[in-house]
Image 1 (tube, rainbow, N blue to C red):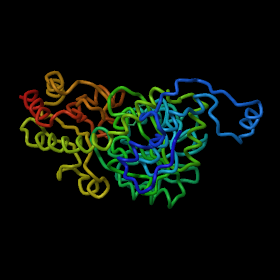
Image 2 (cartoon, helix red, strand yellow):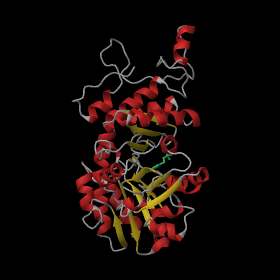
Image 3 (cartoon, protein in one colour):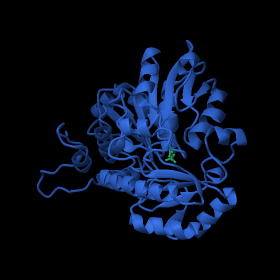
Image 4 (cartoon, rainbow, N blue to C red):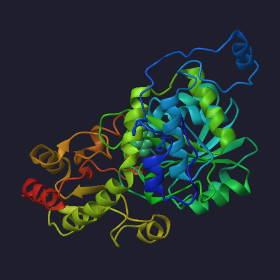
Length: 394
Ligand SMILES: *Cc1c(COP(=O)(O)O)cnc(C)c1O
């Protein structure tokens, strides 16, 4: 079903046309949901060929499905990568990618500021299987010194949640190449619209497709994108551990990706307007948005991200937790909810959500204060978003 996409087509065009046959008479314009758990073989001979690894036929949806293939083709196109595998969630993608690479006795170097679920996976689960994790800060200082003969991979996430720190992707690739480490980046916040880590030399880019790629808050999904050989290892783990995406989810992901570029560009321009408004508000202590010249990584972000500074921001209130809770309870256009990247703008308190069950020390290291409010900008009119925050802060 997946058709070859001409290389010169731009990403937005590729996202709309990937995998879909446009030239047949009477063919569907959208990808059908192949709602079947199993697929017929043409003969016992074909079954034998499959067992020998000589047939690429679909046999069972946990192993692969035509709707999933279209989603994977589109993802690979968007990241300018060789291959992709989709998974049941971002965490299924992240855990499958890492377990495809790491064995007992191996070490992983990871930035400390990563998605809360990833942080807890590395802290609570991997050590039980003999995989040691060493942390570096977002500036990657001292990473070279942490490498030993057991170090296998370097894992980063950028921009980070919730303070939007930016990791220098070129620097990370340099460290990984120097020590022959496999490089992985969680590209959920940036999306392939704003940054293309595979083009910069990363081996794998990881996504929670729940967020920008799906884009409508109606899907839980994930993806591993990058070098064919490593994607196949991740695919094997998805098959073993069972974290495969459902065809219905793949359909929603395909539909979401068609409008990805339009959504992300609009979210970036609205986020910048909201960040500027908040930066000028007397009750706001600090705004975390890499598009503001006051942000520690503004210049790096300008170099590294293209088209905008992202749709995520956070702000600290002078009045601490009580003031942050008051804003969250008073907003009317923004919804009070976790997650991000959808068409609805959301606010959440990281201390109670993404960063729950972390010690005060861990919170401080993540740059999270009790009065930090995280914001995901959606597609509402930016003037309405600013007006809503103005009344909630009053
Ligand atoms: C949400 C998120 C994840 C986890 O994805 P799920 O789809 O919830 O499993 C991983 N990384 C980042 C940056 C996220 O925002």
